[in-house]
Length: 355
Image (tube, rainbow, N blue to C red; front, side):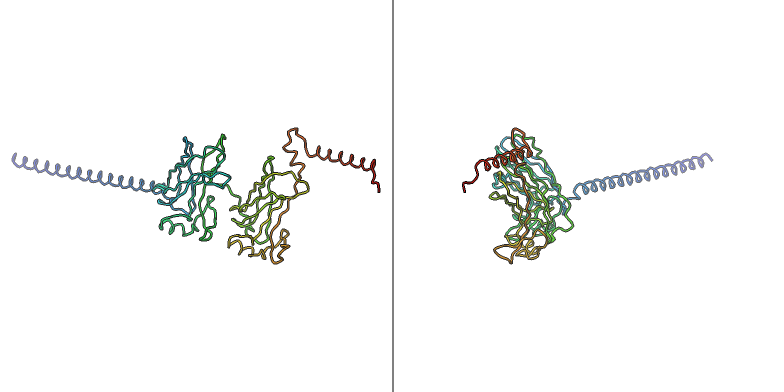
């Protein structure tokens, strides 16, 4: 009897031990499974996070950012972009009002879209620091396939058109103005363009002048229009001239020599026949024959040609007096002119013609 109880007790203990081990094993499996799920979830979140950080790489809406630092005889540029790795960008320091490239460099975009540049500092005078991604130079085939052979897929406020031997290309470009001794904000920022006018590119051309100022050395004229980007327009103030290209939003800026002149107008002209891009000639006619509106003028030497002419009356007296040290105004000048005219009239009465 005691023997049977002993055997039964051993069997019961064994069953309990087996059940306990089974629960322990199941618990361990559940823990491992949970841990595995957690690791998998964590990995997925990490991948998702990495994906979000690099999701914009390769977008056609180009983004450029970064800072320029002055370090001794160099400009150091540490920038970020959403360009695909291996894209080639160019950095330049341009002086002489855009006429001379003082220093330049060529770099490749890193895997995270960042880039680093070192440019020789010009040391004296004003300059413009330019960071450019274009297809006028060397780009890998992968980059061309992604953005287009001519960069035609590029979008956003950094994008400009420009003409090369291969036609009209697009480029992404950031410009940073540098002034010696000034409080320079050497940060890459997207330009703030105006909304395109609804009649942008229409042959019924209009031109609006927003501001005309002078500092005694130069005139500064700014305005906007519905003329296509890249169109060359000119300004004349008798013998003082300048030319520029219309910006992506139809705006424009001129800078030309100041001179005090009487009875002269500031004249802005746009001639489709004057060595314009092909797409501009197509829009307005190679001889301007598609142009219409109240700004259209026929060429007096060739009646088959038309061009746009905007004439702006300029109050020279106000211009001259705005910089006078004694603070005189146009009314004072008018009064002086009236006094002079009265004096001349008196002289004529006192000294009539001998005839």
